[in-house]
Length: 170
Image (cartoon, rainbow, N blue to C red; front, top):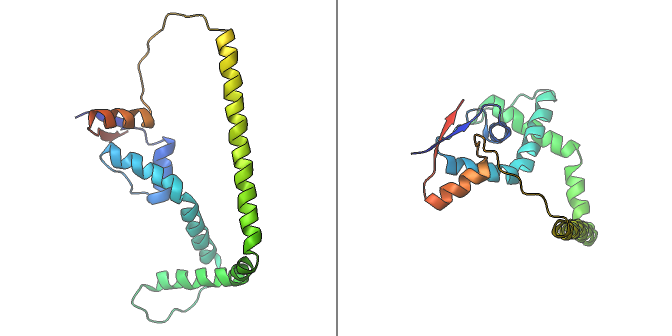
């Protein structure tokens, strides 16, 4: 079985540990790759949750009643609810219901801007292709060096060979 070495200072391992917790270390590369992609999707929610916990930790304490969950957890829940109400969350949700058509227009406007940016990028790529056709590069002999595969290439190779490599952390 092939092995992939992932350094402790790699950005994707740090990002996964921030998203999933500090004890996140899978042994197989395939779940690691897919959980990294999922981390990009859920990172705004994790950031929101971490910021609510941060705000709740800075609020004055509250004597929680005797619930079945621990006092520390109950205290954080109550602090989070206080932060939500104090930040105008209820009023904001009410205004969202009133101004929903405006929100849809804003979303469509943002989608139009993103589409325009993508169109400009395609235009730049098209101009670059024309430039490269008219000004070809000189072909130089390749100098081979030791290859360090990145995450995407490793996943593509494992998909092709139908085997996921094991992860070695260093």
